[in-house]
Image (cartoon, rainbow, N blue to C red):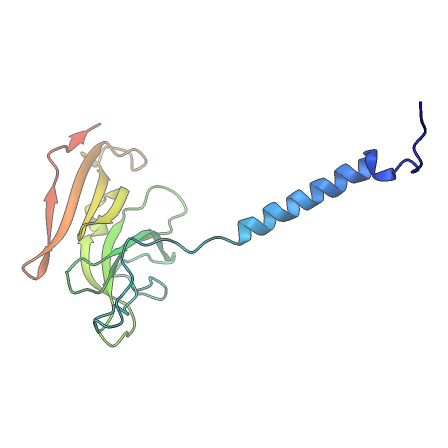
Length: 191
C-alpha cells in the first residue's frame, strides 16, 4: 500500500463544529429568504403609456377611517377587506368588514364601501352594505366581477345564544342604477 505524499486533510473529517456551522448557514439562508418575497402579481395588463388613460388611483386604505359604528369604550376593528372597481368608473373601492372589538361574545359585523375623492383625498365611507344592527356576522367575503359576495351568519330568534348562529345566508351586492342592490342566494338555510 502506497502512502499519500499529502498529509491527511482536516476538512475530510466531519466534526460537531462543521454541523453547527452548516445548520447556522442554512438557517440564515431560510431567514433571509422569508424576508425577501417577490412582488404580488396582478391580473391587470400593464398600462400603455401611449393611451393616456393609465390608472393611477390606488384602493383606499381603511386606516384612519371613521366607520358609522357605535362601539362605546372599545374600538372598531377591520376584520376583513377586499378591493375592486364596484361602480365601473375605473377606480378601485375598498370593502371592509368591521365590528366592535368586544372582549367576549360575537359582535355583529358591518360591511362598508370606501372610496376617495377624484383628487386622491382622504378615504371615506360611501355606502353601508350590512348594518351591524342586523346582528349578522360575515364568514366568507370577496369582491369579484364588480360585486361583493358574502356568507352571513345570523340567528333565528333572540333565544339563540350569540355564540352560535343558526342561520346561514348568502348575499351579493352589486352597483346598479346609482345604488348598491342586494340579492340573496336561494341557498339560505337554518343549521
